[in-house]
Image 1 (cartoon, rainbow, N blue to C red):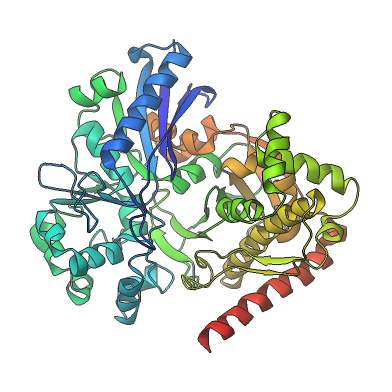
Image 2 (image 1 turned 120 degrees about the vertical axis):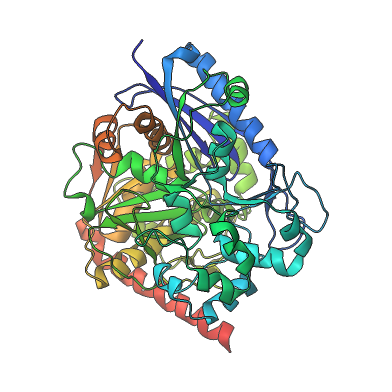
Length: 535
């Protein structure tokens, strides 16, 4: 059998594995839940042992489903959330909590404990902040490490290695401490365009110890995503995963960035790669676009050199709550429990049922007539871009006392549109700096809904495009394994050979003026909350 490749994706709630052939056709997939802890307000933690166990289970299960042998797999790639993993010098877990529980050694990406530290860093005026949209986020890694230094100094004494989760996975697979340019540049302030860390930055913010031994604890050896690591899978990793010793392993990526690899370069897409925006729509949402020259966009992270593709600059934005916001709003409605029962009776999950009911209610009419005066700002855990405001919060305006099915569907449609208006803000911020996006290439769980794709196209006034595979994030991770195995010379080549365009949805022209008015209301509500909060 021709060579196949495995992509492993570690998200917020589960680890997933997908096996693809050389054309990017999905042969099998599997998932396994991972556990999270929330020991204090704003804290979210995970376990590297639990995650590695879940990864191994998914790889073994997908191999069994595909009926493949270990020799059929030529390469494997990993992506993961941008979560902070802390290990001791022997690569064993170190607690990141006041309970001293070593198994809880990961500060999850969504953890907000380091808000004060992020603000302190932002007040420092460090030059590296120019490459994170002007303001660092508590989601990033140096604020989290600074929090550990201030609140759990004994953890700093024990810690031998601080890694992004994707780099932890490649360490477990190969024994190599080599880090990915993607993770370090996007979340750690590594200056990839200069090939260096900024020593003054770490000294200024109080983390000077990290500069010792050429920054060995956070990454002395840095390579492009997909670079072949060490000698491939170690004996222990090969045994854990059920794969062959020495199977090629590519340097990893952040999960959303793997989604961009799986979509942005697909054959058949309109325009040039610089005119496209990758939109990964899951629990949160991430936007990624590349430019040939560095473009500084206030409130949008970057520009990051080579963080996605060698030689190109990456801008990264997104929404801290996307699918999570829709889910929360739906679950808060009085009819939600009944709707869940109805969905189960029809063999669907709640979101699938809501999509079906929304299509029935809408018929040939506009979604604008359904949502009426109901307006939502879905910023439950802050605004990631373009305002870079972790203190922003959600607003719902125009809500009545209705408890019936139709009002639940109305809330659902309004929630999806609100995500679209947040995306529109990011597109506007890019356009203001000369980056004109003609199409949004969408991936993630929500992307499977045609209704959601149409609502996003209408809310943004921009074409929404999908690719053939239903698992573009897994495909992007598998592409890393394909490059590492020598299947292709570089990522851009493999992107066009393993991914293809499926469908383009254009905006409904008659509704554009109505969406422009709703978008103006969306921005006024955001401003009103900021004014209330500040006074």
